Length: 240
Image (cartoon, rainbow, N blue to C red; front, side, top):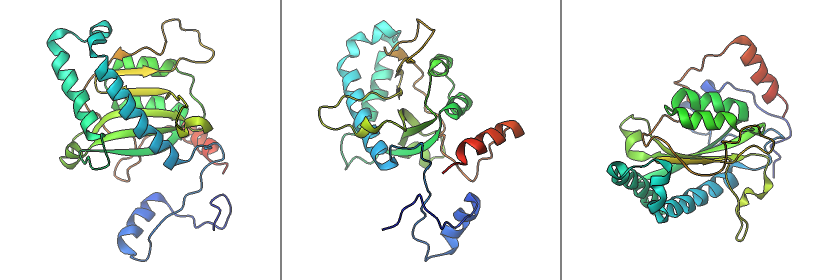
């Protein structure tokens, strides 16, 4: 048994690892040590996200008669309903193949900039910016396989969880809420523990139904940041 928190490690750039996976047939797996701040492991976070998406989608479909209260009018109700039921069908069982879940960790402060750069929804971003996020978060994205195959923005839903929350295992009888739940056409956030905004609560609000790009790292996408920003991120991620 190996401990991913202990050396020795082999240090490689991400781009180099991508190349090696194509060139080296003997390279079957890569172990990346997690920061001590990531108490919740990725596999547990992903399982929890799948359960959360399934439960929340079914809950919101059941409560569709209340959608008008968040601004979804009669003329657009069917469009929003179709987007929600499509996600429900895609995550209904292990045999469903239209939607897949992809999970990654990032700094809480980076999540806000990350989503603002790729999600065109001012209301969602404004409420996300009001959240007091932990240092690390797990982000689980529901990916539409067909959109991804056609090289279109594929993310149709996002769940954000506290990476230091050991209760997110979503055991039977334990009610766990994500920090952010964005479904097709509507979203909900958990308000700050110590907040100043009386307008921020955990009720659902209307959002766009348009899919958006993933926030996962890609060796084909270059992220530009200032030297101060880069130094701050390196310092935050440097203590394993």
